[in-house]
Image (cartoon, rainbow, N blue to C red; front, top):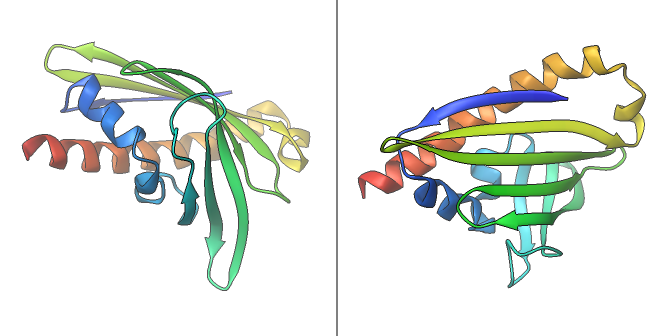
Amino acid sequence: MSTTTRIVRATPQQVWDVLADGWLYPLWVVGASRMREVDGHWPEPGARLHHSVGVWPLLIDDHTEVLEATPGSRLRLRAKAWPTGEAEVVLHLRARGADTEVVMEEDAVAGPGRLVPAPLRRLPLHWRNVEALRRLAFVAERRAQG
């Protein structure tokens, strides 16, 4: 599993508001190219984001599903991007004064990515998630400045 942490200059609720707007997913998730649909009850458990991954014209349509959600503090997702496989992603939000510590945990759980030994999976996942949290911070911090 890869674990990546970043301090965001916004409250946990402000960060949660970005996560809770499924249409913003491609702004902060590295590899997500476009949104096709967001279930109306996102981010409740069972809700799905219908997205595409890749670069046009080589796009793959798939979805990400909420497994667990604790508003303002925790979001657990099952992200699919076949044929590469599926990953479980957990985002933890913790207040740190006026800021938020965001911890992102991710690992492959199905498909070809699961066949790669864990130590070899961690580094590219970490690099990707450093960028994802940087993008998430950009969105949340700019919205917080309002």
